[in-house]
Structures are given as C-alpha cells and as structure tokens.
Image 1 (cartoon, rainbow, N blue to C red):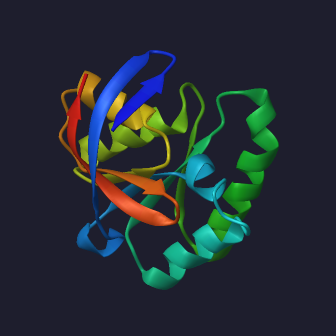
Image 2 (image 1 turned 45 degrees about the horizontal axis):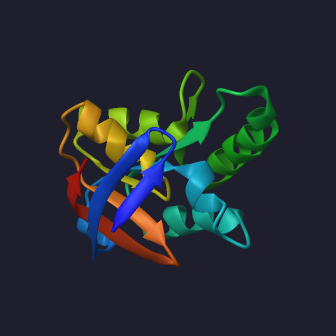
Amino acid sequence: MRVRKRWGSLRVKLMPDALERYRCLAVDVFSVAASLRDEEELFRGFAEAGLSAILVLDAWNETQLPLARRYLELCAKYGLDCVPSEHRPAEEAAVELACRDNCAVLTRDYDALRRALELNCEVPILIVRRGRVYRAVEVKP
C-alpha cells in the first residue's frame, strides 16, 4: 500500500504480528490510545500483560500537556515507564528510543517509518490498524 503524508509518500507492506513476540516496546501512546474507547485500557493492558514497554507521551506542544499529565498519572497508577517527548513528536522519539534499546515501536502513525529510514534503523515498526497489530516488513520511498 502507498502511504501519503505531508512530507511525501512511502510504499509499505504490512504483515499481521503480535506484541508478545517482542522483548520490549517503545509505544507512541497518544496515537494508540486515540483508537481506544477507554484510554485507560492501554495502560491497564500493558500492566496486566507484563510486557516490557516504554510509553512515550507527546508533550512538545502546550495543547498536549493536560492529556500528557493524565497519562503520566495513569503510568504511575499502573507502575509503567513513561517518557514525555518535549521537543519532537512521540512517534519520532519512540523510534529513537527503540533504536537505542533495540526494541520494537508500536504506533498508528506512519511517520515512525520515515524516522526509522532517516536513522537507518531496522527495529520492527508495529502499526495498529483496525484493532490489529501489523509489522512493516517492506518500506520503500
């Protein structure tokens, strides 16, 4: 499929995947939580599943701060690792953390694929679509 964004387009092939296959995840929280009816479900789910995850929160724009604070409270409530991204979008920060720690990235935002290409980083990028998780197995400009 071809993904068109403001910065250009990418040709992407997605394959079904499962979070349990990865030892750690860097999660773009705002994008994944936006697809849920109950945002707390995301935090509760990670805590119950026992997955090793770093939850990355958008906090680079003043309009995002109230929700970022709420999500930080949920991270504390469920004992999860959360990192605010204060200088760039969370999907980019998640890719950078994943590349550093050799983790997979979980997001709904295809900008993560572009950032991984820019960094020449080959960590798995997992895309949430229609309630399922897919791994980007082929990405071409």
